Amino acid sequence: MIPPPFDYHAPGSLEEALTLLGRLDDAKVMSGGQSLLPMLKLRLATPANIVDIGRVPGLDSISEEGGYLRIGALVTETALEENATVAARYPILLDTAKVIADPLVRNRATICGNVAHGDPANDHPATMIALRATMVATGPDGERSIGVDDFFHGLFMTALQPGEILTEIRIPSPGQHSGGAYLKLERKVGDYAVAGAAVHLTLDEEGTVTQAGIGLTNLGMAPIRASAAEEVLTGQHFGDHSGLRGAFRRVREAIARTPSDDELIAAASQAAADATDPVADRRGSVDYKRNMARVLTTRAIHKALERAAARTPAGG
Amino acid sequence: MARHNVTVTVNGEAHTREVDSRLLLVHLIRDELALTGTHIGCDTTHCGACTVLVDGVPTKSCTVLAVQADGAEIGTVEGLAGADGMNALQEGFMQEHGLQCGFCTPGMLMTGTALLAANANPSEAEIREAISGNLCRCTGYVNIVKAVQYAAAKTAADGAGEDN
Image 1 (tube, rainbow over the protein chains, first blue to last red):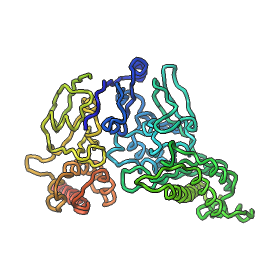
Image 2: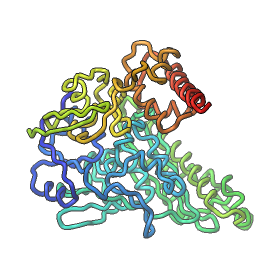
Image 3: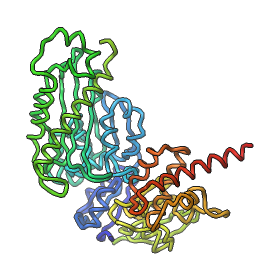
Image 4: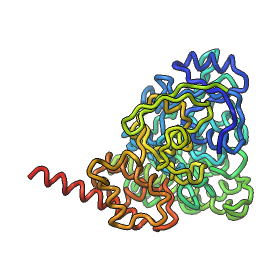
């Protein structure tokens, strides 16, 4: 399939890219092109101009500084997967990258592109919701920060303005007693999610959840924050979770809790399922997808708690 | 629609062509340079039959514009065989029956080439992960995994032989 005609521009600097976006009519920014080029072929997108930022220097770095993990616009999924800091401190990002498309696509596909595309079937948005990330958009008037909850407006619609480029994603560095996980049900490698759940939990030293983040993939017209599910978990004590038993034994013995951890997790997972609005398609019925949202949320909470326990000093 | 001068080095040989913005890399390789070993399968970024190396990185060439590859080193299946004939990976596909219809084979070979360049002795799991973006409808993948293992073992043995 041949893409429709367009003019191609390859700016050599961010300033040049922004000038082009300001001057050109109907321009689309391309980074890895792994979503945009298929959409061009299928005539789902027919921009008059493509501004390829792939040769813009300074956008391909990933670093942890100032309390944030900073992911530049041109960081590929493969680069994220191979990054030692991500592997050690942000396993939820590794979970997410590894289930996107396939390794060949991930060699070119970018994290910022995955988010800026605004496709609720993409995987990073749910994880960015769970992690409470900030999107940094650069436009003619400079940078502005957009919280993840203000970023996704609907199917392929985001807060990005036509003259803006998503130049960086900032993710708050994880606290000591925190952990996250992303789980995706897919029919085969490279498929979009039947359902996906991202969970990031921050606990205090006694095992009480101080902040919960839960994002859901491909279960509505936009990526979903399961706020009610987060509220179920926030403020609750998770002392008798198997992964935390060692770390929080003393606290566990000191506090008599109701309901049990499993009851809490079940309630949160049901609240997450209730937050979804899926459509029936070849990947399943509405009821099936809702149930998978519940199951994946349960498993992701367990995995997040296990990782939080692993990050807790022994004997605490 | 703008035209662009694009220079790519394919299997060590530089080529310059004037191309449309929308020309895909796979069409530059097949139609302009007449290197038809690179196949077009699904044309929708799923099957990997069009896999080539772009600066050493295995890439689906149906999902890259030719202009994006300007200045790049491209590796295609035509560049694998040496003066002595097939290389170890190609020989592995023959010896282990790593193909039946052969349509996916050029892509499998290029992905396998990149894998072995990065990891001389990959595990079966690593091989299966690496080729998970290359679809084969004949073999069930078992013999493709064996073919890559054959190449890894043969290359290791040849290296050991040279040391002696």
